[in-house]
Image 1 (cartoon, rainbow, N blue to C red):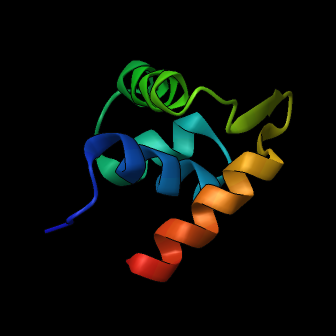
Image 2 (cartoon, rainbow, N blue to C red):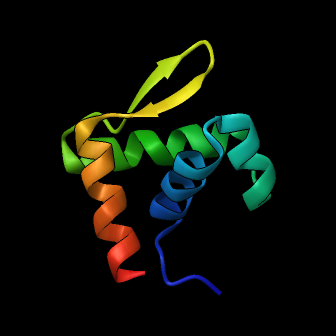
Amino acid sequence: MSLLSPSLHAFMAIAKYKTVHAAAEQIHITQTAVTQRIRTLERQLKTTLFIRTRRGMQLTHEGEALLRSVSYTH
Protein backbone atom coordinates (compact mmCIF):
# COMPACT_ATOMS: atom_id res chain seq x y z
CA MET A 1 0.00 0.00 0.00
CA SER A 2 1.27 3.44 -0.90
CA LEU A 3 0.60 6.54 1.13
CA LEU A 4 1.18 8.67 -1.95
CA SER A 5 -1.75 10.27 -3.70
CA PRO A 6 -2.60 8.72 -7.07
CA SER A 7 -1.09 11.76 -8.81
CA LEU A 8 2.17 11.54 -6.89
CA HIS A 9 2.28 7.80 -7.46
CA ALA A 10 2.04 8.41 -11.23
CA PHE A 11 4.66 11.17 -10.97
CA MET A 12 7.10 8.85 -9.19
CA ALA A 13 6.51 6.10 -11.75
CA ILE A 14 7.24 8.41 -14.69
CA ALA A 15 10.31 9.81 -12.95
CA LYS A 16 11.59 6.25 -12.48
CA TYR A 17 10.62 4.64 -15.78
CA LYS A 18 10.96 7.75 -18.01
CA THR A 19 7.88 7.12 -20.18
CA VAL A 20 4.14 7.29 -19.65
CA HIS A 21 3.79 3.87 -21.24
CA ALA A 22 6.26 2.19 -18.87
CA ALA A 23 4.83 4.02 -15.85
CA ALA A 24 1.31 2.93 -16.76
CA GLU A 25 2.40 -0.69 -17.06
CA GLN A 26 4.19 -0.61 -13.72
CA ILE A 27 1.29 0.91 -11.76
CA HIS A 28 -1.37 -1.02 -13.69
CA ILE A 29 -3.43 1.84 -15.09
CA THR A 30 -3.91 3.22 -18.59
CA GLN A 31 -1.58 5.72 -20.22
CA THR A 32 -4.51 8.13 -20.36
CA ALA A 33 -4.99 7.85 -16.59
CA VAL A 34 -1.29 8.50 -15.97
CA THR A 35 -1.38 11.56 -18.22
CA GLN A 36 -4.51 12.89 -16.51
CA ARG A 37 -2.94 12.45 -13.09
CA ILE A 38 0.17 14.34 -14.13
CA ARG A 39 -1.87 17.16 -15.67
CA THR A 40 -3.91 17.40 -12.47
CA LEU A 41 -0.76 17.54 -10.36
CA GLU A 42 0.80 20.18 -12.62
CA ARG A 43 -2.38 22.28 -12.39
CA GLN A 44 -2.46 21.95 -8.60
CA LEU A 45 1.20 22.95 -8.30
CA LYS A 46 0.92 25.57 -11.07
CA THR A 47 4.10 24.32 -12.74
CA THR A 48 5.38 21.95 -15.40
CA LEU A 49 6.97 18.83 -13.97
CA PHE A 50 8.16 17.11 -17.15
CA ILE A 51 9.49 18.04 -20.54
CA ARG A 52 7.90 15.71 -23.05
CA THR A 53 10.42 14.50 -25.64
CA ARG A 54 10.44 11.86 -28.34
CA ARG A 55 12.57 9.69 -26.09
CA GLY A 56 10.34 10.02 -23.05
CA MET A 57 9.77 12.31 -20.13
CA GLN A 58 12.49 14.45 -18.60
CA LEU A 59 12.06 16.17 -15.25
CA THR A 60 12.08 19.96 -15.14
CA HIS A 61 13.87 21.73 -12.27
CA GLU A 62 10.53 21.87 -10.47
CA GLY A 63 10.00 18.17 -11.13
CA GLU A 64 13.44 17.38 -9.73
CA ALA A 65 12.63 19.39 -6.60
CA LEU A 66 9.33 17.55 -6.15
CA LEU A 67 11.06 14.20 -6.66
CA ARG A 68 13.61 15.04 -3.95
CA SER A 69 10.83 16.15 -1.62
CA VAL A 70 8.67 13.08 -2.19
CA SER A 71 11.65 10.72 -2.04
CA TYR A 72 12.77 12.30 1.23
CA THR A 73 9.37 11.88 2.86
CA HIS A 74 8.54 8.52 1.29
